[in-house]
Length: 294
Image (cartoon, rainbow, N blue to C red; front, side):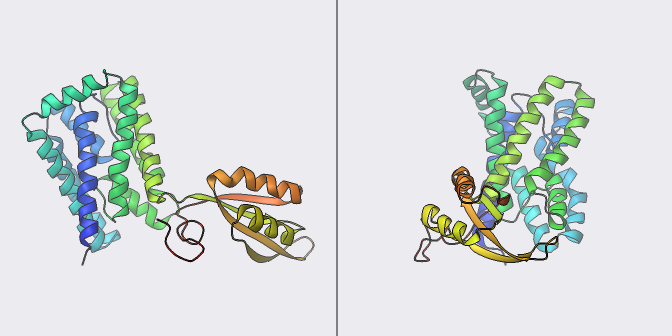
């Protein structure tokens, strides 16, 4: 059984996404990537409603999702796709819809760059909410989820890659390099917002440190940064000597302080800094008493 919260979040995310498409993308005649980009091509050329075309494109992709992502993912994809189409239909049929489109266009004073920023944030927020709830909006979101399942590439980067392919098709059809360039800007912003939401707000940097002074480093990190430290036991290949590898995760704003601290204790330390996504545990989501940080 699916949790009511997940269903509600998918419907909410679909509303946000559909709002951005209807009231920002279409009035500014922007394009999009993925299946949405194809529906916009059909709308701009033949005035086929985006809500209708969205359903037609997704039928074959549902079959693929059933086989590769499983029934649960298919149900949530259907929910997401029908929710987007339903919200688009609501916005299309809303009596004052055209007036609202003109209002947003005039409120932004026709500034396409600001529209791109707003569109990227709104669409990215909607998609991020849907993805976090386990759903998709169909279309190439399904393709991105399939690759994400079998690779370590983030959803945002996969979406961005697929979107670029579709946007290239848009360029061939409309030959409007200026608007396509603006579209790439908001698609990139959308991908980054998706990743930020997926990280849950607790992202940081992971430090792997090979040093001749691991104990001194560990003590300094605990005392000055108040971060936990873990020793990983390894062996150097050349000298075949056992070494203590210091592992520590810090927040992004502590990265420079961490590098400075390491340099003070061991300027010759070998350091690898990696992205740490969605950090859970003491110091990030739990306090020292193991209670959730509110």
